[in-house]
Image 1 (cartoon, helix red, strand yellow):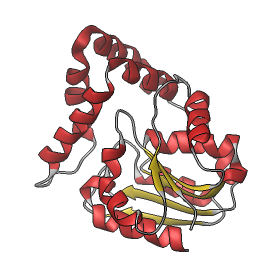
Image 2 (cartoon, rainbow, N blue to C red):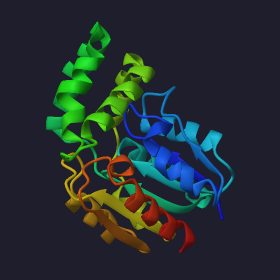
Image 3 (cartoon, rainbow, N blue to C red):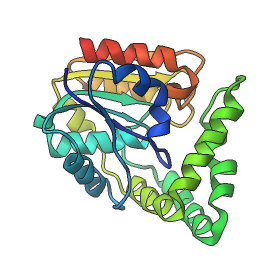
Length: 230
């Protein structure tokens, strides 16, 4: 089985995939990419490729899925199979772009925690008994990465290209997965990606929002196992 490279979402690290890593590492080599050191999708993808094996399975969530698409665009021959979780293949809308500058200014002024708490993380999850615990983990990951990473990632997201042609051109085994109640990257975005990918499966995870790896870890891991073993 090919090595698996996970790509985390904005202001997240390997902790986003801990439930999956603990199971999947018994089946294949698993690594988690770092989305640092660049402020463009092209630059972030080049770092992922530099740190990855010659050929690998690639799974990205949210911003990680957007970076994964750029990895695929740059080096399709290296991506043995592709999983896109709670992500968006389209360029950023003008309305979303307009929200970036105030968020970046706040982060640089020492208010990263406020931005994450008030404007971003509350929209990520469905209500449930583990929501406070998951939100706390998200805050810990964001604070560990810090304001400059937030700014760099925000610029990369703001300026990202449309990747629908990249999806059309990929014939490898693909998984498209999202939480039923994802408000940030809704189900219709995933139906679009499923339609564009020639060899894909669409999985909708019930009782989950934007972070099904943490909200419904067993269901998400089972979907990834099916994809890896298909």
